[in-house]
Structures are given as structure tokens and as C-alpha cells.
Length: 355
Image (cartoon, rainbow, N blue to C red; front, side, top):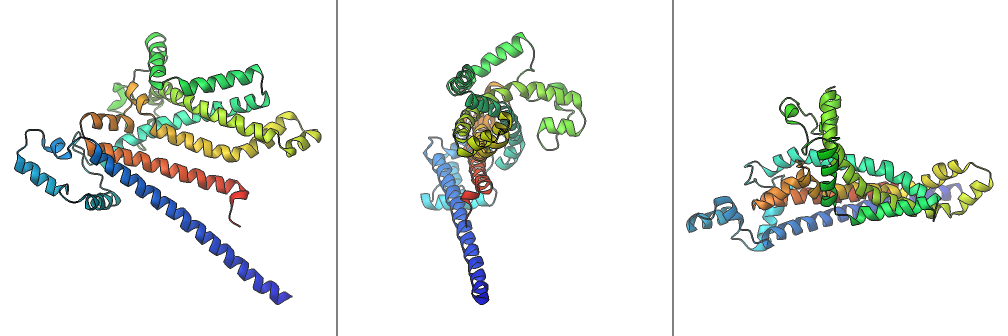
């Protein structure tokens, strides 16, 4: 009997190790396949858009010989599959090309502009989560009441109102009339050449360096676009929180907790919300990803120097290396955050773990 138990233990550990290895291989396959699909999409976008990359570099008045030589140097005379392999090797080596508009490597430009988008999306996500989760809990607890109807109406408006219209109205009201927020941009010109960024997140850098006047100025610039993005995050988070909470409040353990005489506040916040937080983590991460990729119109209206404005300016100037490089980075971030949400869900929910 003892030997049977001893033999069974290694077999069990080997089975767990084999299951873990298979799960890891599946996870790696998903990552590689998804990223290859993203590379293929960006590559074919560059070939389908009716903009000649050679003419974008040399201009419309270049000679035929110069155009032919440039095509050979850029590999555009090769078959399409060979062009894709060259593009794949170039991207994997960290080379996204050179921007025609700024004459800098696209990687350098993205490193410069992406922190602005990251800071804006992070601010919006914090606002959306901090307000959206309590509103969703309130709507679920008071289902069918006036509070529930108001929360649902606020969420519906967040899905329905175009963000560029809301941004223009916000500028007209909060900047032009009330003067509560600063002029569009990221920082006042008085601080632009005296403030030294460290991480690229201006609000964090100003606090780290103890420059509270700069921090206040940066906050006055980011508060309106950040709250607008936060409103759209709030609409999604509150709706999903309400749905998850309604599901949890109908479970038997909630009935048992109430039967034991636990306070209603504890039942809601310590038990129901704790269990609803498992799928809610995925919702928050996906909301964050959507703000990172979907803040283009907000950045344009508020003259925010982020990656959305960078891609838009590049597209208007036929700078396809910058457009494809920025699109690739946004797609990579979105894939990474989706994978992160999947990992967090598996880590927080024991039912999804491999046995």
C-alpha cells in the first residue's frame, strides 16, 4: 500500500507538469499566432492604401531612375511574400522604419509620444473605475429603482454620445466660460522648456521632483480629456458591474449570509463584490486597452501629443512608416493587455486553473 502511494505521487506530479507544459505551449501558440496576424494586417494595409511609399520619400518630381532605384533598395520590386518576410525580420529587429515627417526613427518617435497616451488613458481608467464600480453596485442593489434607471441612462449616454462632440462642449463650457481647466495641450508653454520629464508621465514626474506648480498645471490640462475618457470607461464598467453583481446577489451563499444575520453592507461589499471582482478585473483591463487605442479623437480635439495624434498627422502627410509603426504598437499593446486579462482571470478564479 505504501509503495502504491509512492508510485502514484510521482505519476500525479508528472501529469501536472505535463498539463502545465501543454497549457504553456497553447498560450505561446496563441501569442505567436496573434502577433503574426497583426504583422500581416499592418503589412497588407501598407500595400492596399493608395499611397506610394517611394513617392512619399522622394516626392512627385523624382526621376524615373531614382524611383526605380528606391524601389529596389526598399525591396518593393520583390514578390509580396518576400516583402512580408523582410518586413517581419525588420520589425523583429526593432526597426519600424524612418518617419518622413520627423526624419527620426519611428521607434524613437513612439517612445516620445506614447507616454502621453498612456498617462491620459490611465487617468481615464482610474476615473471610470473609481466611479463606475460604486454606481454599478448601487444599480444592482437597488434594481428597478430610480437610482438603477439613472445609472443605466448614464451608461447608455456614454455609449451613444460621440466623444468629439462631448469634448467640444466640454471645452466651450469648462474652458471658454468657466476657466476651470487649462488650454488644450499637455503643459503650459511657461513650463514646457524648464520642466525635465523622467518617465514621460508628466503628472508623476512633477510629483516626484516636488514641482507642485507644474503638477497643478499638468492636472489642469489632463483633467478634462481624462474625465471624458473616464466617462466612456465608466459607462462600460458600471454596466458590467451591475450585471456581475446581479448574478452574485442571486446566489445561495448570499441568501445564507443574510440568514446568518450579517449586515447588508458586509454582504454586498465583502461577499458579493469580492466574487464579482474576478470577472470585473478582465473588464477593467479591456476598458484600459480600449482607451489606449481609442483616444485618437480626444487627442486631436485637445491637442494632446500622444500616439493617436502622431498617427493622424502621419496619415495626413502620407508617412506610412509612422502610420504602420504606430498601428503595430497599439495592436501589440492591445494583445498584451488581452493576454494579461486572461492570465489574471485564471489566477483569480480557481475553477479555470489546470488540475
